[in-house]
Figure 1 (cartoon, rainbow, N blue to C red):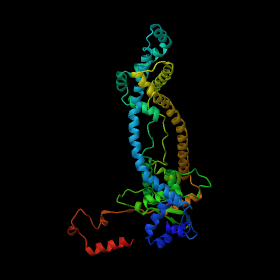
Figure 2 (cartoon, rainbow, N blue to C red):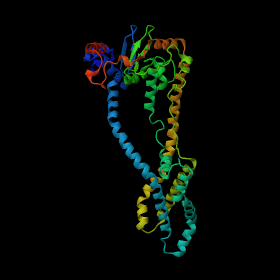
Figure 3 (cartoon, helix red, strand yellow):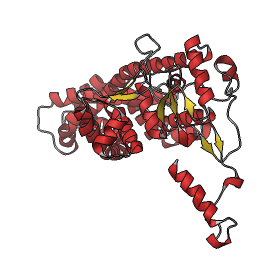
Length: 427
């Protein structure tokens, strides 16, 4: 970073290596990591020299990301514990709230000493007692047992409540692992040399446009992960070579290098052409399970409203259960309200989230379509990458040493082994 500052935020690998006293490979890795973390980008001179350019506030961006990297593991652990506690407590709290609310309502209606007044009160609130109690068939333990028999893959009560209120988690869990697997397989199958356009369908990129046409900064995380580096061909195109992915112990060949566009795509018919994210669902619970949860939530909300009116009408200081319910009443209100407020907010948020996912999927699909029907410039670039591609298969005949046998038992000349080792080391 001192070297980057010294040269004004625009450096070559040699600048950093000479200023910081690093090996060229170390300087290249460090620059790629720094550029990926601070939104830096690459420039190529007329002579084919690659320059790394950093924004003026790159130190601030790096500091912010470093803090997030330190905090994220703790936050993830806290989220796991919190999610577990909420998942268990939220469903049981619904039943507890309903039982407490309606038991308190019955206790209030039964507490009057005046028989006539008590009768009038029962007539006044009779409908509010009869209708909710008629709905308590939902709480029958055999009901859920019958549901599991009828539909083995259905959710239990706790799961359906949590799913209705908080959803079912990220449907794209493991997306990054899938992304890097697809990218690694693609690079390896194409001889370790690719263009930025070929990897764009697997990354988060903007839709094709004149502004984004020359922006290849999105390739930096790939270079860092697979130890790649940019190269410039004779026509001035930037290609990316990944030496580690050019060597393999498998004799299975990749695609034919002469094919690009539609013909080339046909040879990889079983390979996904772009990374597609899944849309978020409001809830994976079935319609009947969601209706049951919503009905119980509505029953609870209705009871909380009635209980509030009854507590306001009381003229004597309550005791026992009624006093306990009166103290908890603010929490009962919050729970009953949040039971529907959270899903409503989540539904609105999911609309925006899914809209963003559709845009990213569409952008990747458009980038993939460009590869199926490349223009003349892109076709030349793709052909140049195929011409520069290499795939080194390490055969058993080339093995000079193995830990499977003792050193003295292995059939080779020590001097010959040393010569080959020095050749490899010099490379």
